[in-house]
Image (cartoon, rainbow, N blue to C red; front, side, top):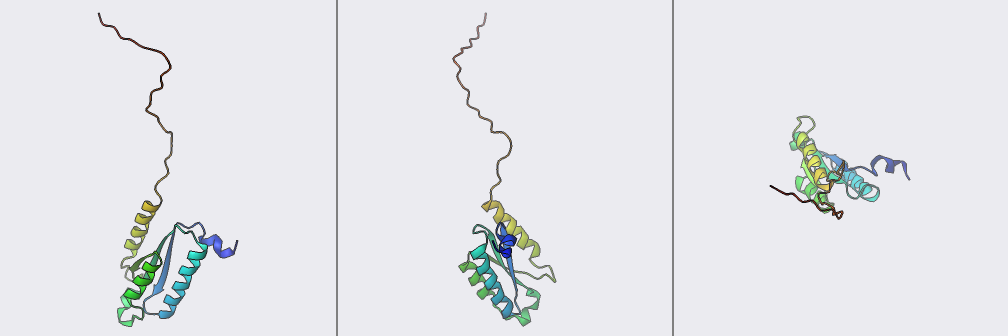
Length: 128
C-alpha cells in the first residue's frame, strides 16, 4: 500500500477545493479527483468546492465548468469563500446530510423478538 492510500482509502467523504481565480488550481483539483477515484473509497461522498467566491472580478474558472466537472464525476458542487465564510457551514451540512443517507446508522443493542414461542403448555383462565 502506498503512503498516500493511508490518508484517504477509508475516508467517508472528500472535499476537493480550487481557487476560482486560478485555472492552475482547477487543473490540480481535477488530478486530485482522479487520484481519489483510483485509490479512495468508491462510496465516499465527494464535493468539488470553488473557493474564493469573494474574488468574483478575478474569476478564471466559470461556475458552469466546475459544475459540469463535478456532475460528470459523481460529486456535488458548491462555491464558498473562506474569507467571508460564505457557504462554509452549508458545505459541511450538505456533506453530513449525504453521509447520513449513504451510511445509515448501524443498529446497536439487543434485538427483541416479539414472536411468542409455543412450548406445548396451555394456560386457562376460569371465572366463578
